[in-house]
Image (cartoon, rainbow, N blue to C red):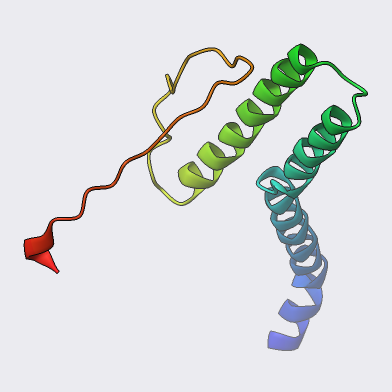
Length: 110
């Protein structure tokens, strides 16, 4: 009796395996940020080789960073965490712009 059940359910089990495998591969591709990071590196190389202007770089970089943020949010949602809050930072990038950071060490807490 069990042999007959196994034979009858074999095609269904095979299809379940195929669908689970497809779902796993699709999930991996949906949350893989390596190709997007590679595009960012290629964009930086194009800027260094003066193939694009800085304005084009900033525009394309913003788009790529939005894609990376979306992928990170997908990963967080799949892990059961809330997505990052939108908003972020704003500002302009100008030639010679920079930032400085100062760290103060409290001598009493060494």
